Length: 74
Image (tube, rainbow, N blue to C red; front, side):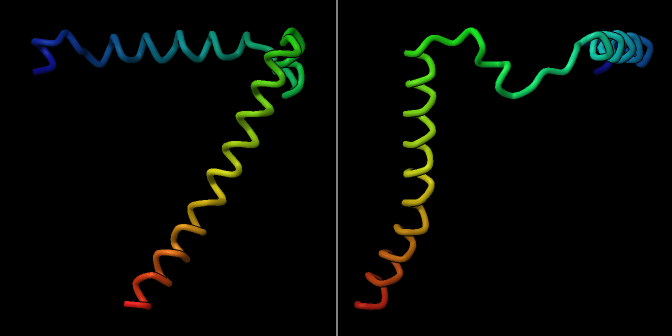
């Protein structure tokens, strides 16, 4: 099947070598630098999404406790 798809070990090695060369050229930046060009609307949307994700994550254990109480009451 590798011959039909054209996948050879040599091609895979060339791809991995070129990917590592590109990774070395990328400078690292801080987390807050990512939001340097974000507008106020963008930042508010990110904050709202973060708060709602936290609330959603907290409701999962709460649902487990409620379901356990429901099953025990039967």
